[in-house]
Length: 72
Image 1: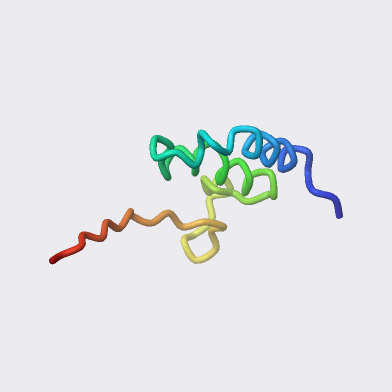
Image 2 (image 1 turned 180 degrees about the vertical axis):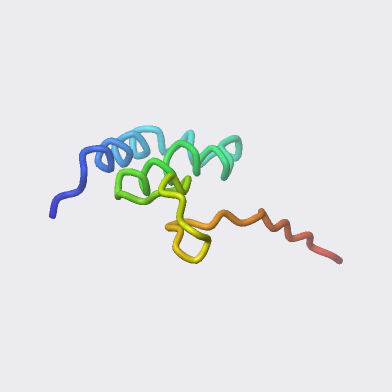
């Protein structure tokens, strides 16, 4: 089964701009919104629970961010 065109387009865009995405200015939230979420949508995942499933049956369960602080 070939990859959907949307997935191929995302991969091409990422490859073309890899230096910008690898810089410290590009953060996790931007990566998720511009690449990860569209990738899963292209693969048929219901990221926003549009189907209205109960938590146990959702495709994705969003969790709070965890911040780890190093101590000396």
